Figure 1 (tube, rainbow, N blue to C red):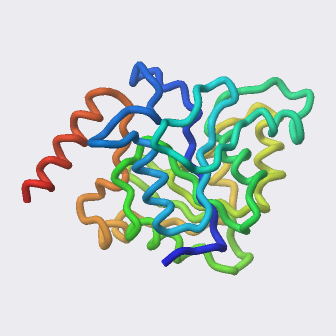
Figure 2: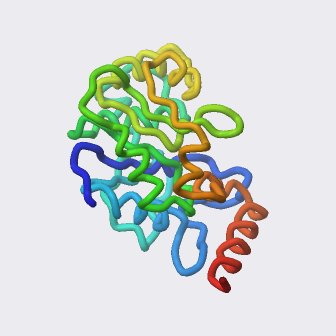
Length: 217
């Protein structure tokens, strides 16, 4: 099932300080992390973009999705505001570029995402005007980098960036939202490996080992 009322945006503009190199380009199996994530979104959505920081390197060679960079946000929407580098900026870039009413935003370091998990979330992004965010609730609270944002949130997001209020979780808690508990996700992915992040080399080794075990049956 390919949806058109939701677009996808994979954020790849982080500093990757714990990884020691650009996380988006880190190889897992035969492909980059960004490839794994954009492919999972592309299995569900007609339009998927990769969001990069303006000073970052180009996209990994195996990712052919459209690129969005944050310089347009500062030039068009935040003139006079000192540029910052934060996930909320990536969300704003995605919302500003979107044509669909909803945008599914994910981090580039979640290679275990699957179409079935994403479709479970996407089924909750309906035409209702009662809420603006669909977000899983993990062990440590909301998961703002695996969430669906309504495009009309852009002015509020821009206001927070201009005010230096850069916390995504803080934004989410002030929005009308649908919270998706872990128990719902576990019905689709019992191991909840879909929420695994690859932040450093140890995380990468852990994900590689888990994939090897699954392949061996």
